Image (cartoon, rainbow, N blue to C red; front, side):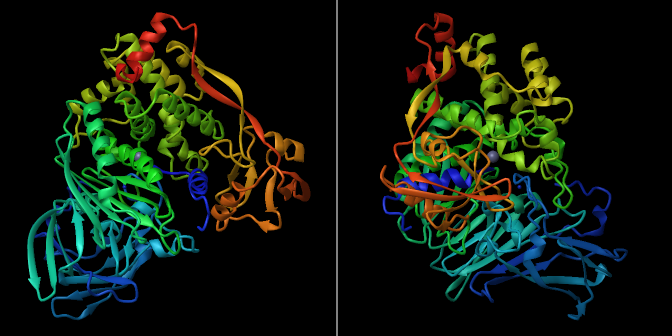
Length: 634
Ligand SMILES: [Zn+2]
């Protein structure tokens, strides 16, 4: 999964808009309760009722000694590390016996229905509401790339949002039939077993070998533009939904092609997939998805991004986000622990190794770009430094393994975002060490190749022994680093690792705007629980200092306009149009009391860190740097 910080994207949007109008249980003990017919499920997209879809499920025959069975929608899906409660979007749940009478059903929690006398159960039906259009309402919604959309123009079928499972039957097969109008475009990575045309509609039946495959194979139907091409030996199916029609798959085919080819080169000789589906849903932002980013699957990804971005921004967004999701094929998809492999959708346990699943994935997604010559070294340096700065706003003394294991609880949940920041940096240090100790014979990508050969998608590792195993496979220093900085709570001194490759961090005075250091790094942050914006303690700019602003001050209003999450994009867009003569008045809240500050915008500057190459770097340092970043970028 990759979550994009709201502020980072707001900033990027504001800059671009010149006129700112804008996640298999082994049910071994109870297997006998079912016959082996697949669970038949049907969904008819031509029959939307009150923005809902009817889901019909025929579970096959339960044996005579079956009493109560539990039917569940997932509480958590893999890759999201948060609670989704898909059961809260299902309603009108009915169970019918073989003589077509309605049976008594008890909803026992948000996601569970208990069906007594299941030996009489013939079929189930229920309606499902979509999640995108109520994002931002009082009802909690899943992370958008795991969510669902039902509309005339486009259906986002993350199937775990529609199709549930019988407890203990997670490894039972499914046949899922989707009926759609003949002319409607669609794509699905699931294996298609039949198609029946009736009048103007067609019903396609897909097979899923177990519930994991139901959750792991999203579909998109609707007004899609699509491109199909081969890149790096993989058949890419790229489907784009853009409500404005401003973005089409053909516009982005080249950038996706170049990226996938480069990723394939970077991964080298490792089994990935024959086909990869990219589902790009561009959101209008109004009663629509706002959780920007993407979710990984074995053979596909669903990415959500704002429709308002321009082509250049979507190009770089696609590279950063889709590359990240594709690299997830390495981990956790091919290298993962038992917690991931035997995932419990209702009451999951979490692995200790997000430093690897998310951190390493994010590192690869940045590193391959410079290593394969898609990006300059300077851009890569800026990106790594940006991660150091973003990580500095989070708890640097929190054990990554403890955070990982407890990721849905506080205080860990609010530090999850650090997996993309410090998580990537952990792996940057490890990669530099691996290349140094092996004279560039080995690296983090070669380590993962070895681990994926040993484990692969069907064989989990033991959560508590993998660090010891990696240590035995590599160098004692790698084990020591992991114990100290990943298991342990000691912050990393990045300077040491930069020094190894002849890089140094230096402060330079740079022009900034009142609220942003650069496109990615704001001086302000938002408290997600209260929606309040405040000034961070990562340094202020000259204008803010002159106004008397202090770190921690909450921003109530700016020039008479109250600042909140709803108007932040428009507001920030306007700030980029300020001139040095613009008058600026802010009402701030400090220690519970309102204060007013005012003055001119002026020409704000701030001391900014830059990661630069040492002029007096020795040949060993330069050699290691070239090994690390790839000779091709020299
Ligand atoms: Zn991820």
